[in-house]
Figure 1 (cartoon, rainbow, N blue to C red):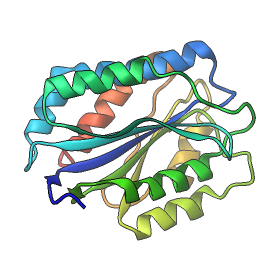
Figure 2: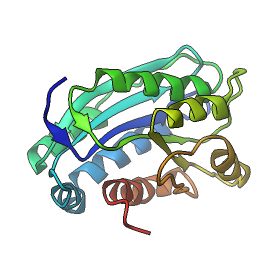
Figure 3: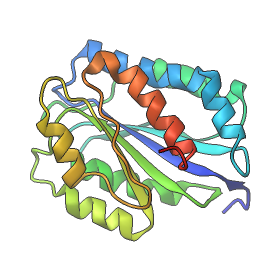
Figure 4: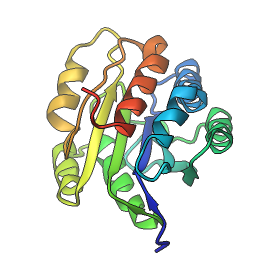
Length: 207
């Protein structure tokens, strides 16, 4: 393992399952890219102890479909953040039509930390989505296993008129040290929600 120390290792796990249409997919990816390009994002990174983080982006859909669209990337300046934003914004949607394999997505992301080449005091999976697991997965068990490895799971449920998804994420998805939830009322508010969420992950002291 590279002995370089970083403040945060973050996996963005983005739901691209059948319930997410093409327009909603692009709104999610462009929202993440916009957050990466925001000066506040860079300032928050530089304010960390080491002034550097590592980010990975995963698209997930059905139980057997998890695709890495941005492999582990170190970010410590605006140039690197904008380069990562460009990759995410232009990423081709990779999915298998079918159900919502949320538990499998959590497990995949947990294992992907094994490929991290840097030393990080915090490891976080940032899960966004608009539906419950409907492929016989067990999100609480997947979450609990990740938490046992000192991985935090935060959630960004896209409510779209259904308050039950927020409760579902609260009860079955998020967990670990300092875990929290930032709901998006609909896909159009995703951009603001992901920025708020990223800033809070970079600075856990934010209430």
